[in-house]
Length: 335
Image 1 (cartoon, rainbow, N blue to C red):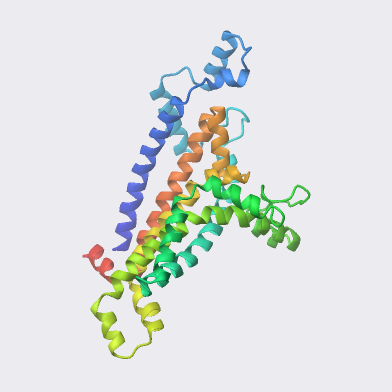
Image 2 (spheres, helix red, strand yellow):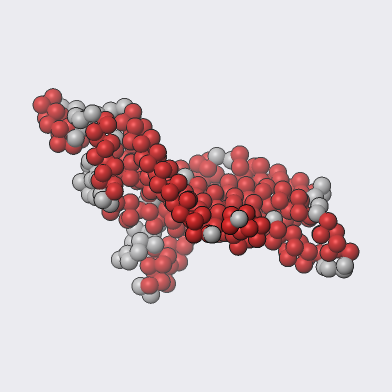
């Protein structure tokens, strides 16, 4: 049954998150620098540093600190920021909507462009359309994100905003921290347009790699399907080329495309750090980078753990879609 499959994957999710929490915990403590000394400054006395380390629990053995950290997480307590003293979960909840907004805008750009490009390359294989599509796809994968972001800033500086989520003169009282949604809920069309303009450049920048990967995967999957006997039979029966490609070929090539799209969405949610930094997009990636520079262990651990959880959950959703896309998988899992 599908319920048993979901339970197995959720148990695996718990194991993965425990492993990730341990790796992040150890990695965070390998970062050079003493958080207590950084907080107090270079002129702090050894006694003051010692007292602060004791207050933060940094003087305890690492295994004791990890056990305390896991125990707190099971109660929904991700700790407090060393620098701001704000609850980590509160900071993550405030920043993560910006990352989700950027990631979904990017995947909405990448998916249709990637699928259409891959379809055209497969249908017109070994032609200039195929060659041009794959050259563009390779170029998109190879292009450094930070370089593309800077180039787009130079090209569109006179037409589009270059940083932030809203103009400094715009005022919006957030409801969900999804600015586009909040502008609709508040009935502020001018804020909606402003938020949309700020979203365009970072979304296009972040969409380049997933667009290229989806295009290449679509081409490969479509070529495999188009060589099947039932496709030739459909052509022999006089079915139009458009119907064969869209109804028969694309539907049967959808599983690999769905897989790669889900993986790319997970990567966008967890890997938008560079784009957020270039465009000063105040999301979770930007928060984690700032926390790494400040040696703010609780924020780093909480942010990365949320990234890992979201990535695994998206993979679970992708796997569940297989049950609806391919009846053979339903038979295999339930047998």
